[in-house]
Amino acid sequence: MNRGITAWGGVLLFAVACGGTSAGAEPVVPEPAAAPSPPPKVKIVNRPGAAVTMAQVLEPGRVTVVEFYADWCGACKIIERKVMTAIGDEPRVVLRKINIDDDTSPVARQYDVGALPHVRIFDNKGKLAYVLVGNSATRAGPLAVELASRK
Image (tube, rainbow, N blue to C red; front, side, top):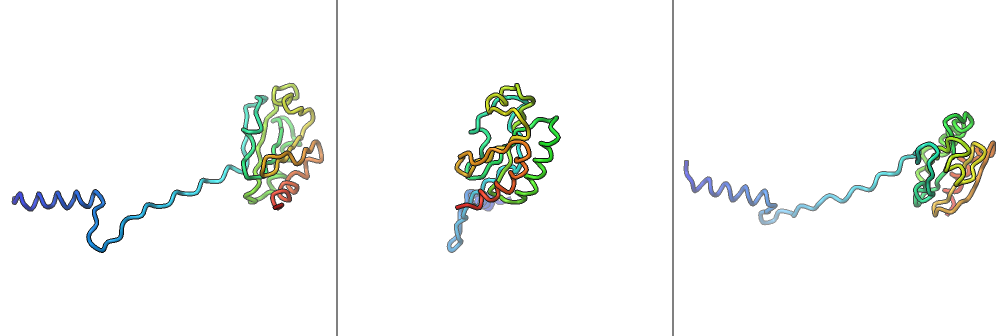
């Protein structure tokens, strides 16, 4: 075997591996960074009854529907379905669920949640826009979509 040819082959391999280009070849441009994936549409944010801060719950730049619920609350399940149907694929609205467990839990006391369903809607700047308790919570989805459409 001829050592001269092997040495040149190694140099060529090194140049290619290190990104060397021949005359007239265009440089390699890195791919742009992928856009961050959108937040999940529905998310439970706490362990049952555990306290949370709204900073942990709200999605910056999006209308956030915060549903206080308990697993035993049948009306809460209906509200979630109604909210999800109303907001559909609207990318500017998300649903965040806080499990109060019962009305004596730390999170229920923290946010003064005594009756369920209990929904709060925050605008895309994090400002509280609506508090809906009981049957009025059925309006949460349409109100959130309307709030998201405001400039």
